[in-house]
Amino acid sequence: MRQPPWCRSHGPYCAGAALMCPTGIVLGRYLIMAGMLRFAIEFVRVNVRVLGPLTLAHLGSLILILVGTWLLLSGPRLAIRQATR
Image 1 (cartoon, rainbow, N blue to C red):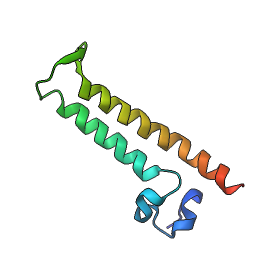
Image 2: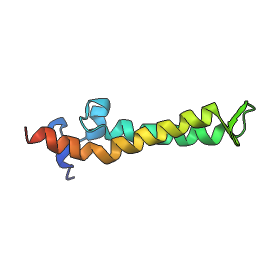
Image 3: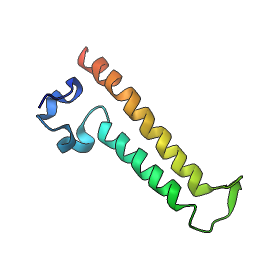
Image 4: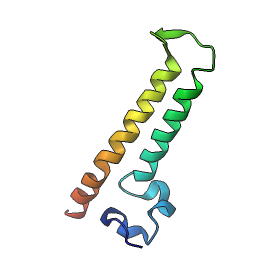
């Protein structure tokens, strides 16, 4: 199995390094999945609406999704930048 260039320092399994992977790929995926699940669950719960049909928990979930997406998109660039130093 060929591994991505930004995870070569952790052996054959980047997921085994979890949060130690310098690019934050695993953390980014977790934040996106947790944010999506929490966003869906919050429609069932009864909370005070803050912004239209969204509650404060919805807005927090959207922030998790945005941070996870940023980690996934910027991770390889940060790793390449670190490797060239």
